[in-house]
Length: 66
Image: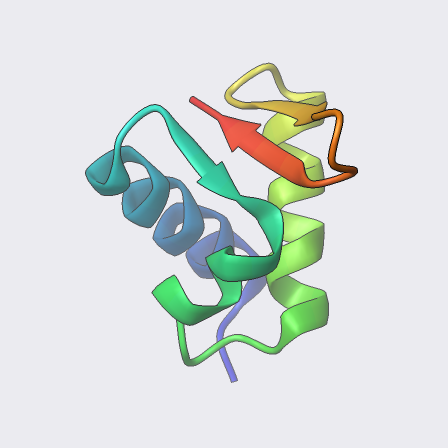
């Protein structure tokens, strides 16, 4: 199991490599080691620390924007 800091770093790096926008429900596939809860908490941390932005589109799909 990954440590919290390592999970944040892995999610951030994976998102940066993917580009500027990525679906929230697909981020889990970018980092297979952490659990889906750990990935969600990492995204929450990134959003709260202004390293990413979470948006909801008209189709009710959440996107993480870098």
